Image (cartoon, rainbow, N blue to C red; front, side, top):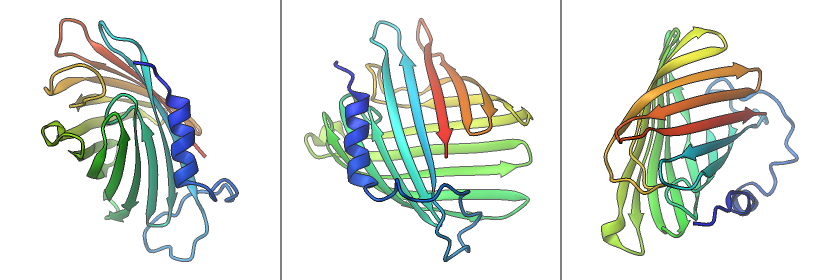
Length: 216
């Protein structure tokens, strides 16, 4: 498979975010009640997959948030040579125990094409965070190719800049059966940059995912 993450990302960004690059860089709103705020927050995420007996590939993602509005573009996420664009409604509940939820709807195009309802969830208490990202892809090309994807994880902040935890995934992005792979994670953060390494077991050799997150 020819990996074209940059072309997919540029095309997705052109569709989703034509007028956002001129937005002033400020911190995102702290809650859904902050109506009238003109601030935007952006994130660029790149997941590099080191899969046994397969070629290395990258899955880039670009997100934009404004008050309750969440926009997202992905490539090589639902499948190889496949892009997706997303619209979501973000809200949060609680203070001591904080629940953040973003129900979304997405359009998938490329090698796999269709419609996908999805979600992003996180539940935080002090240094502990339980989160999950999931979607169900209704494959328009082949109904039997429809599938559910999920990535739950549990993180604990040892210190402000160091996280450890456990994660699981069920994905179609590389050639494995639809079984759940479980593994461990270690992440470090420096200001607007986060670097996380995931190691998933479940096969004779582990799958490694290297994730970089840039927030601005």
